[in-house]
Amino acid sequence: MSTQSVAVVGLGAMGSALARAFVAAGRPTTVWNRTAARAEPLAAIGASVAGTVEEAAATDVTVVCLLDSAAVEEVLPRLAGSGTVVVNLTSATPEQSRDLARRAAAFGLAYLDGAIMVPVPLIGTPQAHVLYSGDRELFERHRGTLLDLGGEAEHLGADPGLAALYDLGMLDVFFAGMTSFLHASAMLGADGVTARTFLPYAERVLDVLRGSIAGLAGQVDADSHPGDEDNLTMDLAALAHVVATSESRGVDPVVPRLSHDLTRAAVEAGHGRDGYSRIVTVLRGA
Ligand SMILES: NC(=O)c1ccc[n+]([C@@H]2O[C@H](COP(=O)([O-])OP(=O)(O)OC[C@H]3O[C@@H](n4cnc5c(N)ncnc54)[C@H](OP(=O)(O)O)[C@@H]3O)[C@@H](O)[C@H]2O)c1
Image (cartoon, rainbow, N blue to C red):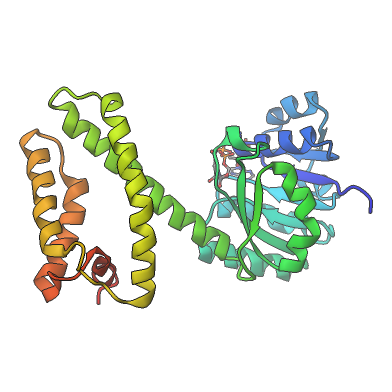
């Protein structure tokens, strides 16, 4: 089988990293960017520079990595009729991804959606992780090319919205964790404890959290929320301490207050003897 050629459309921070990884893997690589100057560093390492999107799409696979779905929507019609396989790695909502998949099909384009789960420096390394969704057979046919990006290329299912959905779930957990750490740093910092001093203790909690969310997952799926090891009434008392300690130091308690108020709502709804997984039913509005 001949080596597949690839184009990268969009040379922002991430698109440039993707293009560098393809070039580093020895893949015939063409690049295009709206602002042409951003292609120059890629040309310097051996990429071909296309003058137009249409020219870039004369490749087997076109990886699209733009600012947002609106930008992809603008570019998509220009790929129509090229015969290239479009792999869209632009972040989106599941609805936007499904809509782009429909539009691509209307243009006669083979289309895979994807989400990049690592920052720029990890592209092309064993730590890279990219999620894909859409036609599995199409993914399998191009997996070798996509693995030039390093690490893991994971196909989640035929629904083109799945990569975006998992991406957003992971971002949900990621940002909540970062915001909580920053809140705790501000709260302890008010008493002179530096963030670095507190860091190993936060890391210990993360180790505990790994086991805790595994337990929550089973309980959420079983819709069973036993409170035999910990219960919401006890959790509410602990969360009230966090909120009070934050307030008394002039640190906005918005982060612990969120958990506090969800827990209080569950207790007020009569679930005080249940475990923390009961919060999922409050979030669902049940
Ligand atoms: N950077 C990261 O760490 C990271 C991590 C995971 C996922 N991602 C995702 O990767 C995607 C790209 O991110 P990035 O960091 O590369 O962003 P970026 O540096 O801001 O680059 C945005 C790119 O989109 C292009 N663009 C914007 N509007 C356009 C339009 N209407 N038509 C054509 N091109 C257009 C820009 O072209 P110009 O140069 O002409 O402005 C540029 O190439 C995003 O969806 C982002 O969420 C990024």
